[in-house]
Length: 91
Image (tube, rainbow, N blue to C red; front, top):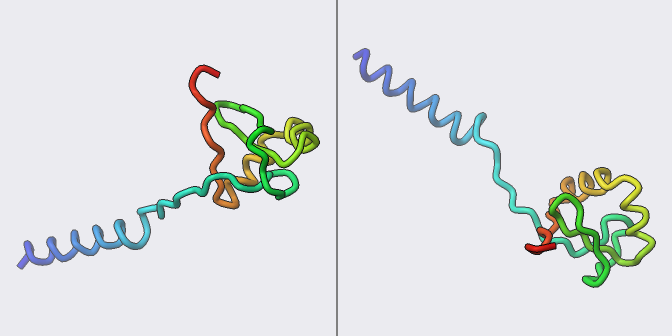
């Protein structure tokens, strides 16, 4: 009888950890399509490489604004589920 109770208890704990409390939901980030500053459509010719990430913008004015506080805009992108691309190798 003790074995059955132990198995049931372990099963309940596993269920909670897997489906309830302990397992964070894995969210796939979307590729960047909007400027993080003005939310306009990005121009792939206008970008900044920052900490191994490539961030695209709609205009040069947004590049200057981003450079004032890059982490603010990276947090905004993360909150929106957007993932900047990686800086290409060798750059």
